[in-house]
Every structure is written in structure tokens, then in C-alpha cells.
Amino acid sequence: MSFEPPFFQINYKLYPDTWGEDGLEFAKTAARVADEFGVDFVLSPQTADIRLVARETDLPILAQGMSPHEPGRGLGHILAESLREAGATGVMMNHPERRETAPELETKIRRCREVGLTSVVCVENYEFGKAVLEWDPDWVVFEQPELLGTTTSLNETDPEAVERFSELVAERNPRTNVFLGGGISSVADVEAALELADATGSASWISSDVPVEEREETLRAIAEVLAEA
Image (cartoon, rainbow, N blue to C red; front, side, top):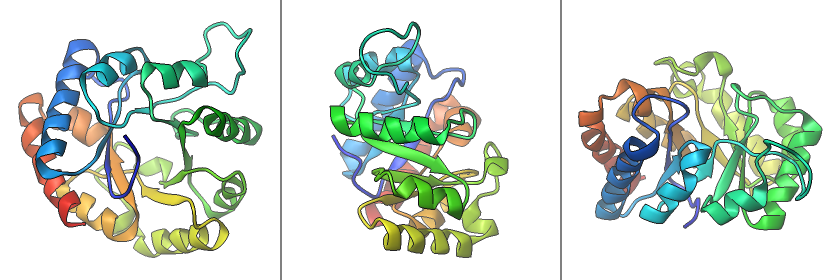
């Protein structure tokens, strides 16, 4: 299991029909489509369901968050080691809905490296992107917070900004890959995003707006784009 580009992230967040058995069925559908097309979907289930999804599918799992703590004291926090043992492959950090400080991010990226988790860090501008790249994350997610949950994405509003950000990453840390997020709400958006970045994904569109009975059809359409990317 890996995060090799290109891939499409399916972010469950806290949306209905995405936890427990419902979330598992969603994951199994994604796994079936991924196998058929020979592509990668990356799943982000709720933390409590990571072990369940990991046991029943072989798709990479990107945890929705973790704590910077070392093993020991820290009631209620999420340990990197426990995520890895549960079956997570990587961790998303600094999402606009869960901002983190620079010291926390630097520590989390290091902790991921120590335990063998892929680090995926959200950034919204060039200056912060420069700082994050110094800590050597595996992926950076370029997205504008105001576009989350909308039907407008950066590949539509400002593709030049994405290109400039990709150039920044290539110059500062060519090992790091670029993920384009925020406002991905159609198969056409997926195709356009993959022309500008190494990977993309969605939460509100794929996990909430698409009816449960249409999920497989939509994932198949996304898989076709991934297969051609």
C-alpha cells in the first residue's frame, strides 16, 4: 500500500453513511473499482474505523489526524504508533477545519517518519509552503479554505497559482508531491486537477453530495480518469 501518484482521496470526514458498516461498504466499493481499473483510491475514514477498513480492504488509508505526542502521558490524543498498528498508511495534517501550529507540524512530520507513516500537510499559500517544505513532508495539499465544500476549485479559478506552487515545491523539495484539494466536485474537476498536480480528492462531493446508490458509478468514472492520467 502506498501513496504513489496519481490517486484520488476519498475523505469521509464526519458525513452520514460513512462510519461503521456504511463506511466499510463504501471502502469495499472503492477497493473493488480500484482493483478493476488498476488505480489507487486513498481512504480517509474516521479514526475509530481505521482498523475495520484496513482489515477488510487493501487500499491505503490516510488518517484524518493525529497528535504530536510520544508514547506516554496524553489522555485522549491519537498516537502515531497506534495509527500505524491499526492499519493507517499516512496522516493528514493542518486541514483548514483543524489548523495546527508550526511546531506541531514539524513534530508530526518527524513522528510520521519515525514510525513509517506518510505525511500529508495542507497549505494555503506560498510562504507557509516554503516553511513546511523545510520539514520534508511526503505530500503537500494546496487548497484555499474558502473553496472547501463548494463546487469551485483552484483548477478553475486560478490554475496559474497551482502551477506556481508546483514549481515552488519542485525547486525547494523535489521529493515532495503536490496534491490539489478544495472544491473538487465533478469528474471534470478530477481530470483538470490531475493535469496540474500529482493527486487530488474530495470530501463533501464524493462522501456527501453523491447519493449512496450512485457512489460506485461515480468512482468508476473517476477511475477511468486515473487510469489515463
